[in-house]
Image (cartoon, rainbow, N blue to C red; front, side, top):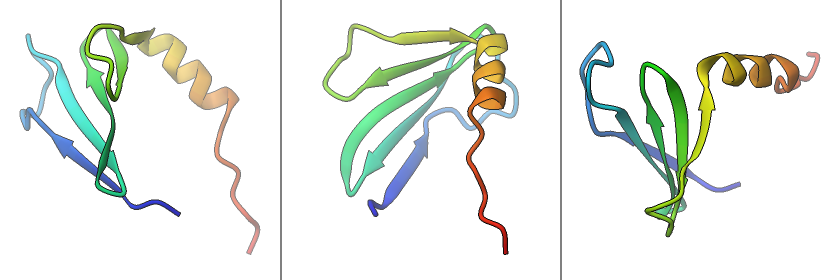
Length: 74
């Protein structure tokens, strides 16, 4: 299983005028960047500095509810 590292670029407590940017690395190699703003969530895949995959917070919440990670019973 790969080891993941997440780095936050803006440590403010509230998202104001600038997106909060998370750089995600998998086994030391850049996997992509996640950008959080007041209006939406965006994903910028590694090696792609132009195109972003954008989704509203409402749609993101729906997706997370529709596709939860299953837990094993103990």
